Length: 471
Image 1 (spheres, rainbow, N blue to C red):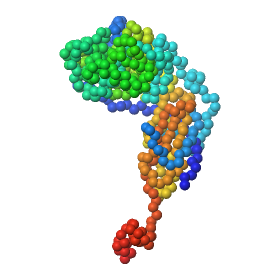
Image 2: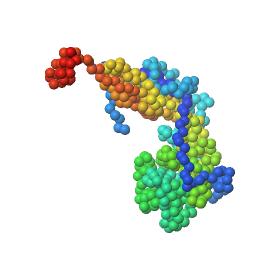
Image 3: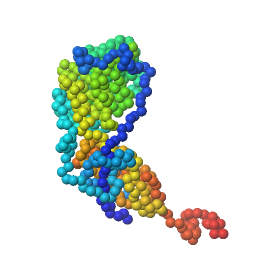
């Protein structure tokens, strides 16, 4: 019979830093060669360039938890700047004792000498979001639908690589792919690979490249735009509707700063697109291309993304930057001073918080009593790592769902419980707790008489075998 589970209290010690993990480098394509900055290739765009139409002026369902779960909630604790920097330190309970922090602890914005106040931006809409978690660090009319110009092409690129994984697929340029505004200057009858068109789309912001990609991937532009809207719904872009793949002004073609940040997150998660949007210059199909995003030259840690401009939309910009294992995404719409606004917002965000590990994957959480097995206990480990961007004095609580004992048999890798982290009342991350080993049922050994009796009933070993054993 299972015992009544007791509430477990334990202290969380937040590690003061998080080790950033870099993904593998994407190998250079043989069809696309980057031009060294010192070569005679195109230089970074200059402010004196006039805007072209369509472009900016250079400028699981939860598995059943075994056992009898107990739910306990840890007290709030603040990040400890003096905590050990050992990678073994976890922000999960490791001790049955806990202490309450002093009441009235100031948040980051109240701390004397803390982060600078949020900058004033000239954009009609703006947002600053941490990429891995989606935490919003700054927003201004972030959900207002507006014209977005060539930042549309981020969705064009994402749908293209997901619908047509073979980047060496060849697209023949048709007359209907010609377009006004910024251009890759495609020629009718010319053949380019999808990869080459993606560079022309995201570096040169070619409106013709957008139409060629749409037609080449879907057979016609209208079908491709339908795919774009389906992807927007999948990403939760509720303020968004696309009418074309290049972002030229069209009634009903709208999105919001928040939605474009969600799109930026998805683009950066794709290794192919992450590489392209961060490329400064490249030679593609005999063309020298320069990325219109000047933050790649101006802001240390910038990972690119996309510019945009039309007379009606004004200047639009989606950009990303990395520092100390944290990636921020910034979006501004209708912003006459976007380069400076993005730099100021990045500085603000990196000063406001940093990624804090709350737990590490595979770390022993605690041991549980096992009943009905020769093994008295089984260890429970965290299934995955959890990290979150936190200010210096922000407090995280751990909600633990875990039995205080378990009945054999226990299977290694099965779910024992769950660990949920909360900031205030908002869940900010969770991980399952898994059994680290198996515990078989302890089956009592039968006497020879009992085994003979089982055999006579047609169970167990044959009687002849038992007779030989007795002899």
